[in-house]
Length: 366
Image (cartoon, rainbow, N blue to C red; front, side, top):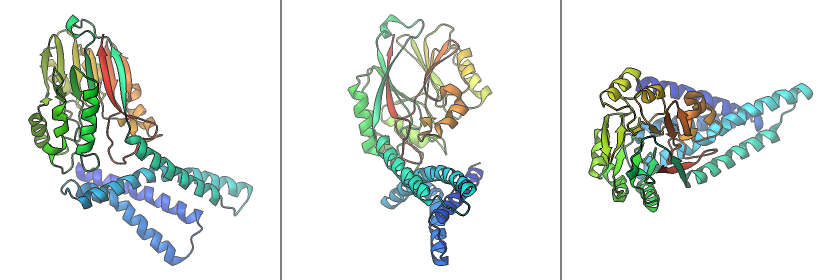
């Protein structure tokens, strides 16, 4: 499966780079064989850089691997906008040749390249700003003891070779400033790469919410065995909910592993085994905002999810909206159940956010 994914990703990136290369040759009217071969060599290196660096950081954690992965990730974000630019340039080129045969809208092409660069720089800066979002949620049959208590929900930190211990401290400090009664971490705490798993999350051990901090695995913890991550998380004093539930002062908190909640039957069997009472107030931590009908069928009051990142980069958010419908972001209802999907606090791949915000969410129960 991993080999197939690498093959597909490599082929897709090859096509993307070929299209961008053709745009550069056309815009700058490059004809010199030496320049053409130099440009080809540069694009071949850029093509393989992200795949190579992604594989490298799975086994190596060094200053070199971090710099290489950061550079290739930034290029990946820029290339996404250059790809869109190449599409717009090709339309302009075709139209200009209809009305003025032999013409080349090179100035428009250069403008598109500049816009792509500006959006990339803006996205890198914007991704570093984490917003505090506050919402109020009504949960039926909520015990009076939980009235006006608060939770902080944070997902998709992707701690690794781009977002490190300093980022974890920033998140921990923001959470502590909100004084929550309980904290939920909705998966992909780690990026799934080679890191010091204990040291990088140490700041999260200082949160100290009265009812504790609860974590579920995301797909990035499960690239390989999740044990090294969950052991470190437990060592930091964070409760790992692995297809299990706890009752906290009359409120049922349920957590499911990502790998066990993506298949219909397995997910349904896990929830059925937890004996959730109809009418019992409950919160389900599930990494992906899918299979909502099963959670609603088992009388879940509120599902908290992440995973989508709201695509990080506009206009790719239209893809996440198409996949997850309106549940790709924000607070929505599904039958009697409420669903909140966070856009996440960190990034994966390009360290950019354009048209979406990094966030932590404070929830007040009413």
